[in-house]
Image (cartoon, rainbow, N blue to C red):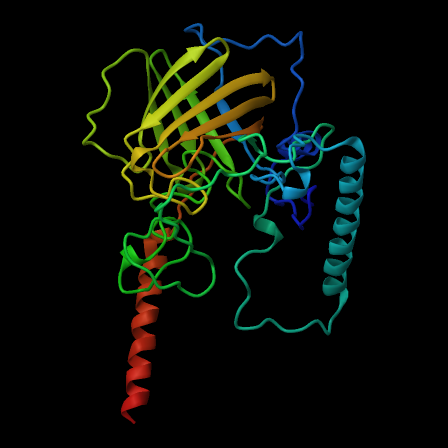
Length: 355
C-alpha cells in the first residue's frame, strides 16, 4: 500500500480477513468520528472495556512533512490523489509479481535473498479524514529540537557504525565483539516498535490488553513483552529501581485508561535516535471510541533530551483473532551466529595475511 504522503508500502498477507477489512476502512492516522449512539462497554468492575487484540499499523508518518506546515489533516483533494497513487502503485507491483511467476527465464536467486518481502509488511489503507502526521504537539507536527549535549546515536540494517557502548538503539550495531555491541532488538530485549511508546513499523504492530480490578496488562506482539500496570493509589517504585520498560501506574478518567511510566533504566533512547530515557516520563491514554477502535495517545516529557514535550495520536483497530507468541530468535542462535561469523571472518583474514 502507499503512504498518502509518498513512499511505497504493501500489505502483510498473513493478516486475518477481518483485520484487512477493518484496515481498508480505517487508515491509522484517520480520525474516526465517535458514534454518538456508541456506548463504551464496561468490565465487571465498572471500567471501560479495552480488552482484546489491537493493531496500530499505519501509513501516516510520525513527523509531518515540512510542506504541510501547520496543516493537521489532508484535504479531500490530497486524499483522492493519494488513493490514485496507491491504486497505481499496487497495480504496478501486482503486474511485476505476475511477470516473475509466469517467466521461466526469471533471474536465479542470488546469495543475498534480502531481509523482507511483502509477506512481512502490514500497513493500513486510506480513509476519509487523514492526519498529516501522528505528532500533534508541537503544533507543526515535528519532533522538537534536542537540548544541547543530548546524545544522538544511529543504527540501521547496513554495515556496523563504529561507536561506544552502551548501544541504545534497536537495530544494527557498533561491532561484533559481544552481544553488547548489537542493537536492543537483535538482543531480543526490546522491540523496534513496542516501546513504550508504541510506534508503527513494518510488522508485528499488535498488542493485547487485559484488565482486572486493580491491574491492567499490556502485552506486545514484538518481543512478546507483558507490561503490568498497577491501578489506583499505591506507593511509587523506589527511584533506584530501573527497568527496560519502566514502571507503569494507571488510573481511569471517564472512558480513558491513563498510564504514567517512569523509572526507565537509561539504556534506551528517549525518541527518534536521541538522548537516553533515564529521566523520561511517558503518559499514555487508551480511549475506546468505537467497537473496533481505540485511540492511543502518548506524551513524552524529557527535558534532559528535548526542548518541548512530544504528543502523538495513533488509532488502533480491533483484531478478530488471537495474539501468537513472537519468539525473536528461535533457540537464540541468531546472536550466536552473528558473533561466530565475525570470528570466522577474522580468522580467515588473519590466515590470508600470514601467507
